Length: 81
Image 1 (cartoon, rainbow, N blue to C red):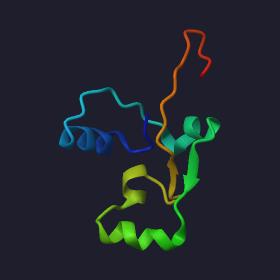
Image 2: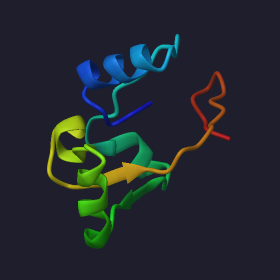
Image 3: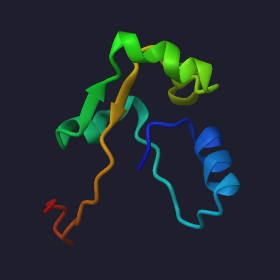
């Protein structure tokens, strides 16, 4: 699951030989409910830009809110472990 726009996530997966389905979490709605979202500090944004990482272009908004990498197990009843 990723806040990346579907076209960007597809490009990321393809260029890294990742062969899995990636769910689009627009606005980090699900990740936020799981308590996994943080905002990239202002002082780090220029560092990302120097490496050519344009976060707003990838997530489709100007929030700089990103999910912490995590693994979740979802039970058949929809509960998350």
